[in-house]
Each structure stands twice: as C-alpha cells, then as structure tokens.
Length: 177
Image 1: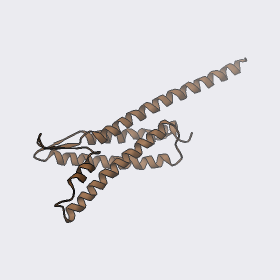
Image 2 (image 1 turned 90 degrees about the vertical axis):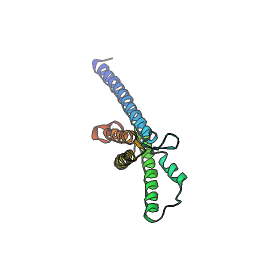
Image 3 (image 1 turned 30 degrees about the horizontal axis):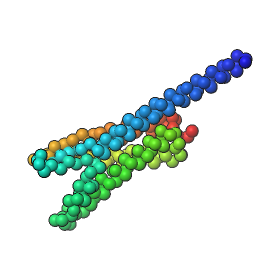
Image 4 (image 1 turned 45 degrees about the vertical axis):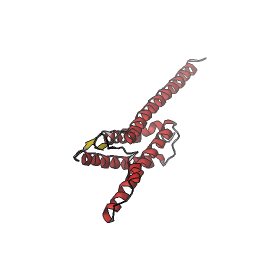
C-alpha cells in the first residue's frame, strides 16, 4: 500500500467517524427538542378552582375539557370565541405533531427539498401558539382561584430549540444529502 493510498484510507475513515459523530449530535438534539415539545403539550399552563373542584389546563387536554363542558349557555360572540379557542388548541396540537414528525425526518437524514420551508412555517406557528398559551397563563393567574403553570414556556422552549436545525449550518447536517 502506497503512502497516498494510506492517506486516502485515513481520510475516508475520518470522514466516516465525523459523519457518525454528526449523526449522534443531530439525533441527540432532536431528542431534546422532541422532549420539550411533548412536555409542552402535557405540562399544565394553568389551574383553576379549589382543591376539591380544580381544573387543570394543558395544551393537550384543553380541547377535551372544552368539549366536555359543551356549549350550554353560550350564545353569540361567546360561542364564536369558544369555537376559535377550541380550533386554536387543536391547531397547536397538530403543529406540534408536525414538528415531531419533522424531527423523525431530520433524525433519519431523509428530508426532501421542501421540508425546511414547511418546518419553518410550523415553527413560526408553534411560537405564535406558545405566546397565546403564555397570555392565557397570565389570564388564568389573574383569576381569583387561578394559578399559572410552566406549560407555555416549555412549549415555547421546544419551538425555539427547533430553530438551530433550520439554520444554514443545521440544515447542512440533514437536508440536501
């Protein structure tokens, strides 16, 4: 084996090891982001009521609590607001599920050319939705028997933790391979 062949073999081995380390780092970050997104869906963003009759609000449970309460006694603009509220939370859940699916694609390094654009839109929607949840946390905390929770902050952290994957350097790890 000549010196050039040995050098080429060493370079190839270093490229393989670098690729393995990049994959490990990418999958680890995807796991952290996924954990934050799932926790953001499950961790309560507020509690309302006394200990005996206490309602806990999380992004994932809010649509079900709203459907359980029904529309009895709601009319006009209150009914419209309730429907928008319900639709917004269902939309936020779907956005979070889309981001989780995107993390699977990123972790597998199997993205198509449109994936970065779609994921950017989903991240923006998740950030806006998280800010709305934070506003609702403030509203609940101002109630007489209300108490805020960290759910909105955790969801916002998950959405913002997704951003480095969409930068030019982050995309170079998983897109256009």
